[in-house]
Image (cartoon, rainbow, N blue to C red; front, side):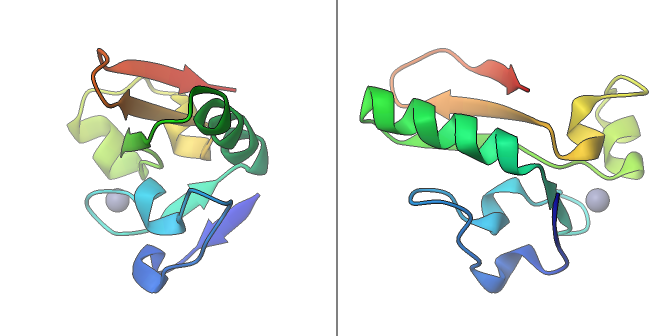
Length: 94
Ligand SMILES: [Zn+2]
């Protein structure tokens, strides 16, 4: 498990993904499971188009504020809502 305290530090998690992309929108913390990054990078490589993370890690407060499930995978850095240029929004989780 990767825990990034200041997601804006620019830490690169894979070829196309940086820690800040997974940061909680309210506090900037990012908890990211390596398997999530591996799968997202695999998707990115397979489709050859940018994959945008619209919601990655959520702290408990943020998860409650957005109406997330009590045990949402977002709380554990194991889920990401993504957007691929020209596609509908969808959810991706381990
Ligand atoms: Zn937060």
